[in-house]
Picture 1: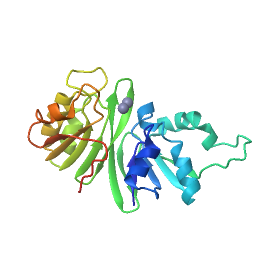
Picture 2: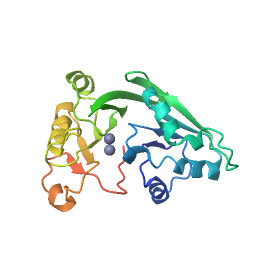
Picture 3: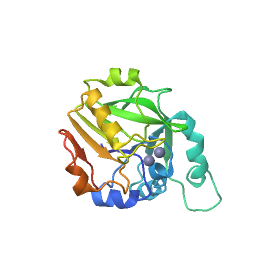
Picture 4: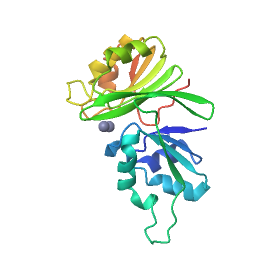
Length: 212
Ligand SMILES: [Zn+2]
Ligand SMILES: [Zn+2]
């Protein structure tokens, strides 16, 4: 059962590259354009396999997603057909939910003037676009995570994102065994900066596969 986190602007190309043709579950961290503007590609997926999709997102983002992609949810009078997409609200303020047998914990983190949802699947976590973790979030996840993918935008500090250095410090505080930095800006150079990574931390790249 594939689960996708976020649908970026190149989502169709990413699905084709990964050979994912059968997808029914999408988790959204937040609705910045780089995380959701590939939403329209879910329509093509639905028209191809006719399987209903569930998109999980925070309740505060439901009306915003419906507003941006209104033609996917309401009758516009155009006989193009709408996809069968159900918007499922994530637990209010964070918490545990299930997709079939897969138990997922979500936490909410500050990202400038918005909140993002971070996700933990057992000992694997995917948390992007946060400025920092609170002390309570650090202590509740400490020692629980073996592999974690997180944003590490750039070396210098940023107003709404944690920097490379700040995310590496969070990996350390959480006791993460393998930390993978993603959401990297043009300031990061893969060859040069991989050599600067401490033990147990690496840079993600397009098409990367990890086994859990
Ligand atoms: Zn963002
Ligand atoms: Zn982003």
